[in-house]
Length: 183
Image (cartoon, rainbow, N blue to C red):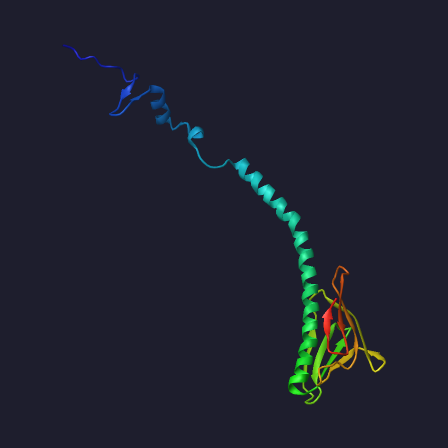
């Protein structure tokens, strides 16, 4: 009896399944159906996502800069109010008058303990923040110096105007009663 053999070009049987000759040829040449079985993103899909993210970031940067500048003005204003209140508290607590001198031209201010003569500063305002005006009236005279007295009052009243690089202004008001607030 003669055994029937199939030619090599016909189906090859494995232990689990029959492999079609076309599939066998693809596997031998390295050509497989990767597109149907592939997972992930194509280069075009990734490029579109990167482009959209770039546009979002591009549109948000000017908004962020504007927000940052307005926050710098607010911080400088609150810092000035804090310095005035600190001078008042030191005058009351130490029973030493505190003299605050503001220079519009140099954009600085300094604090001096009148009793000891010790000076602190000069302190500068944040980058881009300008002291546009320091109008303090003490005994009917307009100036840029105010003193925190030992009884909790200020020697005069007036206002300070701060301006950022875009021209936005914020005002700090000082009253002789000892109140210092931003408006």
